[in-house]
Length: 640
Image (cartoon, rainbow, N blue to C red; front, side, top):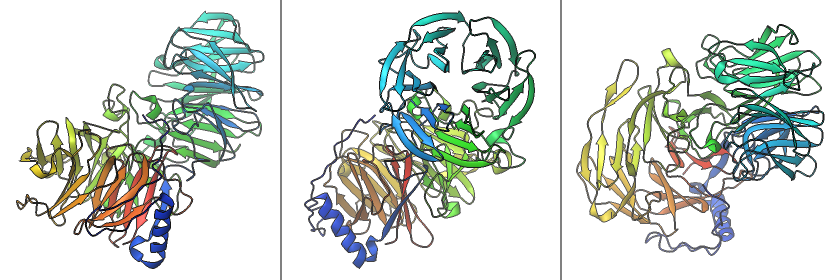
């Protein structure tokens, strides 16, 4: 995980290849030269846009992986996450806009947040695990820490303020603790695995027990009251009480994926109704299974209302692993008093990237878990979530034991209408295949086979064939796609192994382009997560050619990621925002892309498969890049 990175501001490129002699003495000179070329030579025409976040700039982006929410009476939304690279650990939003942040990169745990007119309270992370931090809403600074649990991690699951008292759900300690505004323990009582909490208009404390599918109530002194049993399949995950109306709103993370509304709370609670499509994004009669959008919720983790009656719902869309900083995404919906959708705020990408779908000629993009559509303007463009945790509970994308730290990078191929998705993490040596069956599963990606010990390169080509170089084999393995099963699952033949050419030294990365039978190899670095400084292009690889037709020597250091399409190879670097484009036939450096408008493109590429390229039918190239700083996918549109 990166902290702040120091950009390389002075550099020159001399001898990138023999016919590239133009020298640059600074980043500014380089960009000026590119802009000058842009006005005189169409090869340098490119635009920069984005998707996966409402906003393109680093100043107002929506924060990463919000997992809890508190809404003030005046409609200011506060969210907490475990990690945000650029300091939006606690995000502040209003009326569909970002209005501030506090907490830095990693103060809060993300599991609980509460507030009042003066302060915000959040569960903290290591080295303050089990503590609650108090932040002044005006100064946005933390002015108090107090211990509320002996547990670590997500020990604290709920915080609610009632007058001068702070009620804390201590999941790790199986208790409810009540504290003064200065952090002194006033009283406590036992509750098994307490989750989200809220207080109703009769001063009853409601507590979720997710694994039991029920809610328990207590007086503020701990006397047990009514119980709501939601059912074995229900997973109550978020609570809000509309005190004036006497209604309890319960977010259900189970198969219903909706909000259940209860009345008659003081005696025998009754289900009055629901809000949201029953089944959420997995409902398949009014939409397509996996389709997201208005009231098609995806893992509700927060509910709130303001004093105008607007309802706020925080979703944490499925997809993540043990690293909670990458667990899910931020998806806030705001609804008017009549239930109409007013706005959405979304941050759908962190340490991930999306690949173009050739079946739609680049109109759709797939990360490992999110399905985007791009219509020409930047923004969220959230079309679907491809994970179904109920039908496929063993999906590695939700396996908290998987070491890949978030399977959010996607490679994609459409083969005669049959779609193949490859999912991996930031620096993986295991990659997972998925397939689609629109008739039975809609947009859901169905888990398939895995490819292991891949440290020297992996590629899914446009015909659905898989190319790997497994660790310590000094060979390239070719898995030919032989067809698809009746359910859409791809079938690959046993691998055919070929020795790595001696000229590439240690192989770090590979790409195969069926058009032209071109193999592109990169290597020369002992760090398997980098790609070295030598790229070799082989024409007629399957035909037996093992002598490179083109050799490109990279003069920038720390090349991290490589992709190719059409006639070009694209290289991204660690600690540098540039993406360099080289001609496969001549090896010439054609263009170095950063940004030519107000779209922030991020620090660099800090992932092995952090860039992806596709050549559209009209000759335009679409190049995507991971921006883990502002939580989006950067999209370059380049017409040579």
